[in-house]
Length: 307
Image 1: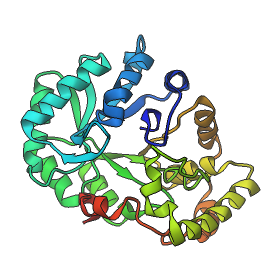
Image 2 (image 1 turned 90 degrees about the vertical axis):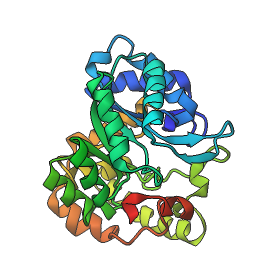
Image 3 (image 1 turned 60 degrees about the vertical axis):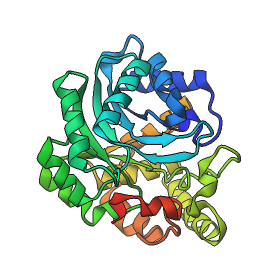
Image 4 (image 1 turned 90 degrees about the horizontal axis):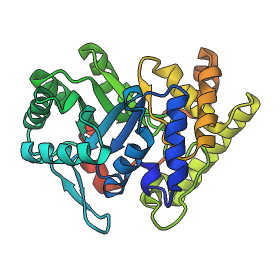
């Protein structure tokens, strides 16, 4: 997502080089959405995986509609729309099959059973391998899994965002599902990154603005001090915390450059101890330390995972 304008302009050649570098480093999962940059991200990935398609799994989200100016127009996961979106993603990605296909959000107008059934049809036809979900709650997960096996839930999770621990992660464990965890850096909040101006959607996020933003900056300062004491960068600490807390799940690292990727991957060789996690880091950043919701109020209301 970050490579297609979400945080402001990105350098296309570096984006392609970063994806290729990730594959060379042994990363096997590439996550995208057909609405990232109005299809730009899928075309970017097409260039990056040319000749190495067999080395990666492609996870694609669909359903989020955008106007020509980028304005959100709602969610559409009707069965006909599902198959239409898939046709365009296959074409843009230049592949014959999508590994994991998932609605980006729950469509309040369409039963999840209908949406999952449509993806199941795509599996039978050979266009999709597995079904995933994104940002849905336990009831929706259970309903979906009765229609067809669900392999994965994509959900936001970080030391700044621990909501899934209460009921979602236990439900996934019970049902034998995995999760891909996005926002592990809290969109750059934990690394000290700030909204860069026009085109950077973080300028509309409560965690980066006003009193909450100032309060959060103070918490992040302490996190940075913790990282410095251990000879790690904030990104490495944030990722290492997720790996320590959820070792069986898969964090998504939303980097834009090879340097950012290499920095983050150091966390694999610098695991945090139980003492680091509980006694030290979580005393600095307790569950309620970060103020402000992770999305603006209107978007929060639409999140099934928050109900």
